[in-house]
Amino acid sequence: MDKFRMMFQFLQSNQESFMNGICGIMALASAQLYSAFEFSCPCLPEYNYAYGIGILVIPPVWFFILGFVLNNNVSMLTEEWKRPAGQRGKDPTVLRYMLCSITQRSLIAPAVWISVTLMDGKSFLCAFSINLDVNRFGKRRNHSLSEGELVRLLAKIPCEHIFDGHEVISREETSRYIRCISQAFGWTFLLLLTVIAFMIRAIRPCFTQAAFLKTKYWSHYIDIERKMFDETCTEHAKTFAKVCIQQYFESASGEMRPFHHHRYEDSDSDDEDKHKTDEDKLLGIRAQDDINKVLWNWHACKPPLKLKKEDDLLNGDANGNGLMNGYAHPTLKKEWATYYSEI
Figure (cartoon, rainbow, N blue to C red):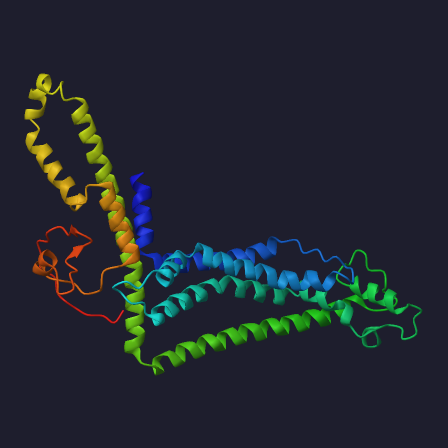
């Protein structure tokens, strides 16, 4: 259990690298999934276009949504966007930075799928085989097929085992032609993505780096603050449950304590040390109503990003922020530096 906890903490502390690894795995999975996917064109005029374009579009949309689902920052972005302003304002630039970061990672797997699909050319052939010019690729200009029969014949071009119009049109020639067009679109798509990525990398230094660094810093702060709050809540809940259980057993064994008093005398110092440690972890919050109120206040009115000295926390500042709805903060032993932020 400790190994899994250490692994989870490592992933949390290296979340950005972990998410980059997830995006890379999704990109490889999309390419592997396409290679393992059995492409079966219906070879019917009514369904060829829908099936071919669906294979080209629907899986990338699914990969894009999956990228958002697997990214832990989505819930953090939503919470930051929907939370009440309280004593801490919300910076739209930070929210935009977080959204852009999530979107960029989520677009990797769809881009790989589209590139592989266009390079292969099967979906493009299935979708656009009925649009071929028979006079250009046909073996005979004067054929006895009606327009409907000709369309059904063209729709069978992607299906080699059921194609029966070799005397009318060359299937090999038309397949090569459509696949060349598909690969041309694939290389154009890759070139476009590369140019966009290059432009973003090249243009970014032209703007003010101070604003970018500030935005990046506060986006990391929001992520770390949320993790620290979750860890503190988990530690407090564990200590609260431990103290409650200890007090229950102590009250239940009240009459038995005199008979076993000698067992407790040897470990009085250890119990006092553990008790002090548990008291420190409880941070002075020892009732269910107090815990509920603290959690509600954290959501509704987060504290301002302005660290105070010990005297300010004990006596309260000019706005009365030293106390939180009647509950005093625990005494701090260190003096903290003061800084200001616009967020």
